Amino acid sequence: MNKKLFIPGPVDVSEDVLLKLSEPVIGHRTKEFGELLISTINKLKRLMFTENNVFISTSSSTGLMEAAIRNCVKEKCLNIANGAFGERWHEITLINGKKADLLKIDWGLGVKPKIVEEKLSSNEYDAVTLVHNETSTGVTNPIYEIAKIIKKYPNVCFLVDTVSSLGGIKIEVDKLGIDVCLAGVQKALAVPPGLAVCSVSEKALEKSKTINNKGYYFNFQIFLKYLEKNQTPTTPSISLLKALNYQLEKILNEEGLENRFKRHETLGEITREWAKKNFELFAEEKYASNTLTCIKNTKNINLNELETKLYEKGYIFSNGYGKIKDLTFRIAHMGDLKIEELKRYLETINKILGF
Picture 1 (cartoon, helix red, strand yellow):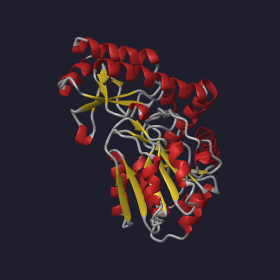
Picture 2 (cartoon, helix red, strand yellow):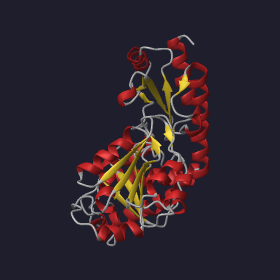
Picture 3 (tube, rainbow, N blue to C red):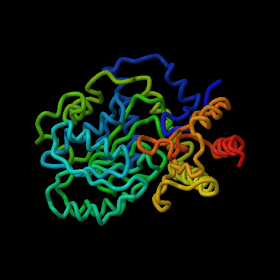
Picture 4 (cartoon, rainbow, N blue to C red):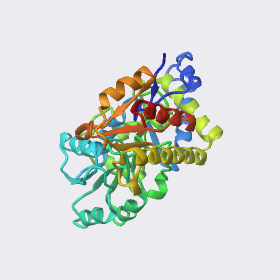
């Protein structure tokens, strides 16, 4: 029996998307592949509301986090963190030999624009990293307000992780002035893991030209050189690319972007109401995510026991992440998840816990 995934990625993948993986493999230097790549990129541009170049990497999103650092940080980076993945970006920045400061905010709180402005006013940074939707805490940071601040500093590259939001929450890359917007395909896009995507602005590409030691695999200049030939620098996951292209077609032309964003909003509202009735939200409610909800374990439920019982009933459960494991648990509600499926999951938890 297949288990229903209620974890923050990978998420369940529709059968018709999985079938695309079984199609014959094509050569990655053929015209046919070039057409597939450009078709996929054009759809991603629509999804991301951008005219920037879009690169597709056979890697996890962490690879493109590293790419953003290696290509766009020359002087010093400000890593904003209100959760585990913001902190990871700081670790990546330092391990790549870049100077960086960590702007650390309590887990569960949203990033307030004022504190970002206070840090940038020192004029010592040429890049800022932000996790839009912090998967560890269920916080969606107020990116439109933060973007207004960053636009006051034209020499600063704005690098954004939209790993657990792209495809579920509206992100208008060009309007926001995001220089690198990156995500994986295995969360709100509901494709099997293995590909990551990013939009890269002209500003970021020009900056990349001035920076040495960018490596090869995640070098934006090499990505661009091959993209101009409708190719990827190295052998990509061709089958996954077919699945992504097909899924994007469904998202854009069957469900429609606005309908998809609205469905995720409804899924978020249902989960938050359930959480407030039975526990407490971990995230500041004002910043609570529409793709996953982090819930305080206020009743000291044995989460390992709950996980086992849910598994027996066909569900994969998600405990809290890192330092808030067991103190919280998470319910992901992203991808192609239907409202009825979420309600059945919540009802199952109710029965197990006797609510």
